[in-house]
Image 1: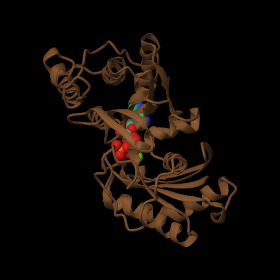
Image 2 (image 1 turned 90 degrees about the horizontal axis):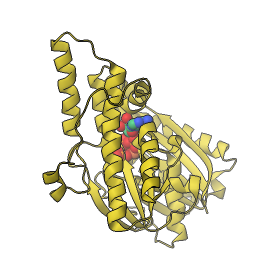
Image 3 (image 1 turned 120 degrees about the vertical axis):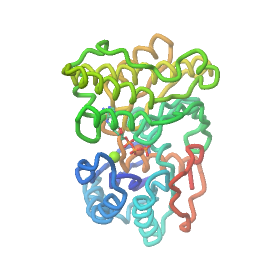
Image 4 (image 1 turned 180 degrees about the horizontal axis):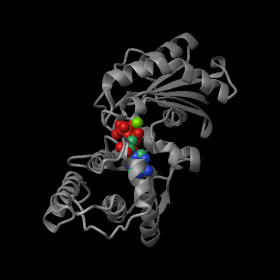
Length: 344
Ligand code: ATP
Ligand code: MG
Ligand code: FE
């Protein structure tokens, strides 16, 4: 089916168009520069930017896919989780399109979209597959038996998300927002062994209760202490070394627990998803450790890891092919939609 997907959960206004598992268009308009000086997304600003960008982005996507609205078989949209004022803009646009075009309407889970996007690069997901979802607001290990409706949470962060840690540490180091791409770049020139930062929830007593859970707030605090101490002692820090050492700590713990989970649960396949899945060190370290463990790894291209409409469109196509019932046009945005709920 030709599916048009709309994403507006945070600060990216995006429209993607797919035909089954084939990517036809994926236009993204980001309001990130408007938020940069605040060091994080300002909800009111994001909401207004979505309103302004929605129609032009839709038009660009249709042109790029060389199609028109009359050809579209279904409309898919992010129903949650995300910022309420941002979600409602995409949701209203999607409902309007679906009712005018008289095509089925699917309100879908943004997080599941992050996992599904790999289908555009590598075809249908094997089952079961362990998904490591690492984004700005979430960090979860998921056992996915069916991307259209059978997902279990195996582990989660007990405090900050991995992307959030990147953004906060970038701020501590005086780097710009969002922190992920800049820290990734700075780390290329740094020594990952320069500073021994903590690996959250890997101590024996933590493992008993939090075997597959993550924690990044202690790591963030350790970076803050390190920077403060260096300033007090008048010792200049190497931003590159701190970035590389921080990045190594994040990648080490993310990959370690994910591979352990595969082995313990007897899962032979892993897939990465979410903005932090674009991280170069996470991608290579995970590939190394998966290979050693005999786990087949799937990594979507970096450009598909951050928020985009194509991830929602391809999830929509999967849901349609599985024969799932469409959503009601009455559904509200669900800012706290749980990852176990694929369709609203
Ligand atoms: P959620 O999906 O949980 O609702 P979100 O949609 O805001 O949150 P994403 O767009 O999936 O998050 O990802 C954005 C996050 O990814 C930011 O925290 C950003 O710093 C991080 N990120 C992007 N590129 C990289 C990278 N190369 N390395 C590390 N982190 C990265
Ligand atoms: Mg964003
Ligand atoms: Fe996201």
